[in-house]
Length: 265
Ligand code: HPA
Image 1 (cartoon, rainbow, N blue to C red):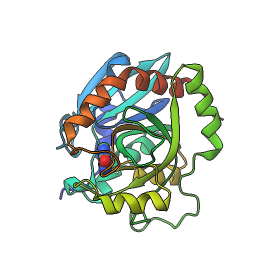
Image 2 (cartoon, helix red, strand yellow):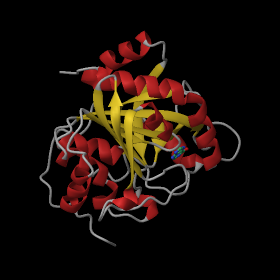
Image 3 (cartoon, rainbow, N blue to C red):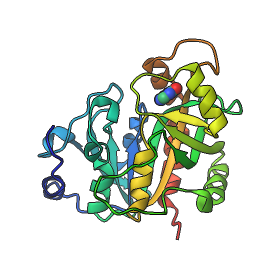
Image 4 (tube, rainbow, N blue to C red):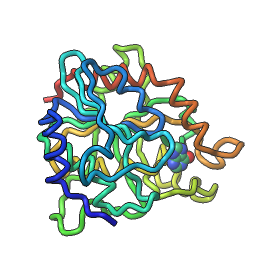
């Protein structure tokens, strides 16, 4: 496995004129169309930046999108690195570290996930208020222990009000991280519900924890693309994820755009 050389990646981005931004956005499965909302957009394939890892999953293009929205500069990552692709943590957290190294102070992390709680429906957008995982320690080995992990409760009501003012229904809840790539068993989902999880997915939680540790204002957004195993009948597959994302991309884009405009201090 090639090492992530952040210095080379940052240099490569700076050479292309990307020296910072007001906000960064990690675009989850099927949510990459947000990039089309950026004005004066520059698209840079990950492969054009030396030492940048490349993406292997359908629905993730592997492109940096740099542009503006409502006058704010934005760096959007179209495509992330999952541990189920075989990447070590150093790679799965690379987008957070790039955000940090560029001095970007706000990060919106999005994902597709399965709904566990029965109050949720396919197509719901959800604000992640807290997260958990079977392996509850995230972050790179060798970094200091921290007590503050990720907890969005202080911001919750502001973000929910902001969504309501846009006419967007936004749920909120706890995201449970699994490493994948297989979907869960029914027994696991039953257990996760008892543990207090509302949605389950294969990304985001490690990124939320690491970005918070680095002092970045971090917001996690989930699109419920399917109900988790056993919650509703039928088999799960990746095409369902993409179809649902397609149907909710406008609301998602408006919400992200408002979150970028808002100053949360
Ligand atoms: N489980 C895990 N990850 C997912 C799911 C799911 O049901 N849907 C989208 N990502």
